[in-house]
Image (cartoon, rainbow, N blue to C red; front, side, top):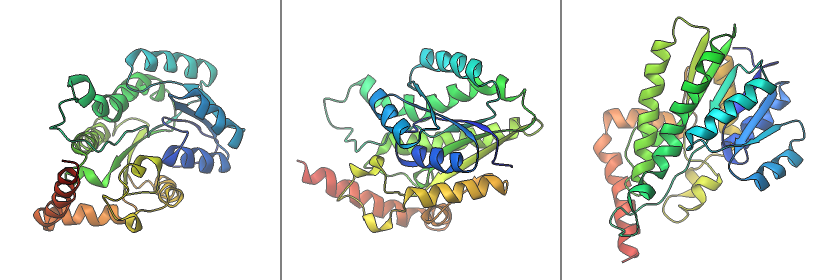
Length: 258
């Protein structure tokens, strides 16, 4: 698809992949809108990227999504690309007695329900455009469970399945559906896992986003940068081996905390 002169909405645009998407897509001559929960971070991003447009919004809140839709489509009626990037990944011990029902559901509300609700809200608008796209950011952990972060992996597996089904249902429309299967990256999301995983395996987010943009341009609906492609194929040929290695990380981490 053509990646100039579009109007693009990116959730979670103040850091990591979201910030890189905003910077690189602005450089290509697009109108870029970002969302985030933290107004201070949005203001900081606006200083760094003066041409970006910002909206404070929380993808885990259905009412906030409705309000965002009303504001964005009124101010930017040419909106034709939605990038569902906002996400949260936690190092979570399910035996922790302080984790209640609301707490354990947090990543589901942000990582899975959020993108699904965003798509459902913006879908009628995107269908009015001659050329439109949805990009959902999943993870290599959609292929292999990572026991140290059990809810995150579940949400990314769910989002991957949803994205594939969405692509089939929108096949005869003007909306193309893409998936960025992100490998481990040097972003604030992964900072809390320092010591649990080898940081040398992580990619720089700008390289991952560059690969994603190249994939969008080439109509590669499944984009697998770096180690993500290895995770996909290892999950098929040696799933037990990889899961065993991931399990050792969790066992070591949670045993050390006792």
